[in-house]
Image (cartoon, rainbow, N blue to C red; front, top):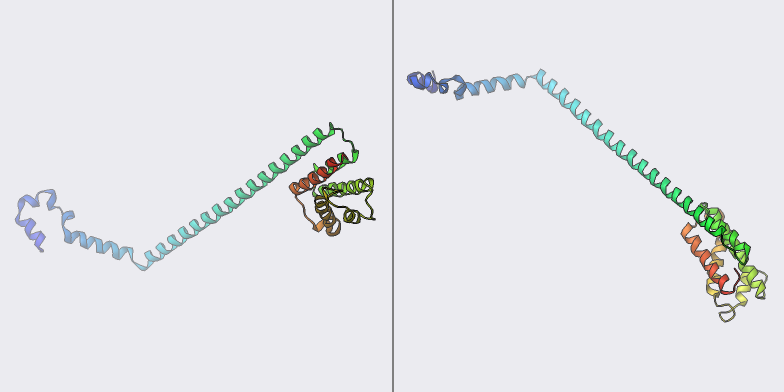
Length: 210
């Protein structure tokens, strides 16, 4: 008999009370804990525990993979939606600009053709706008009686006194040459195309050509 049992048996007040229960006996609780651990840590139970932990690991890994895939799918859909909205806005904006320009009357009808190309949503049309504007620039220099076979030759004959927009003309003509020489490999944005056409417009309005 251990000391706790001796003390409990010698003290009737404790023996007959809740404190006298074996569940308050440290030795009993320690023995029960050891028995539970021996049962839990048997080889068979460890195998079950390993299987359960493995299944949980596979489950959580599958959840992580699923969530990652869904995130990429959502981002892809958001990107496609945004791209669609931008394209639709650009298309509607082009239609509004085209409708607005259709009501304008130009001194040179060829300029309307340039603007029609410019408001398109196709990059090739923007290039055509620049090429057409460059042809108009050539005709303007012919009208101004500058000598030379090509536009470049005529610009070489000009100076800032006779042609104040000479530097601008060289800039836009060089861009036109890149389009002609590089073809489809030459890329140009809508913003850049509009900037170039605006420079042509500056030249033409300076001489009352449009």
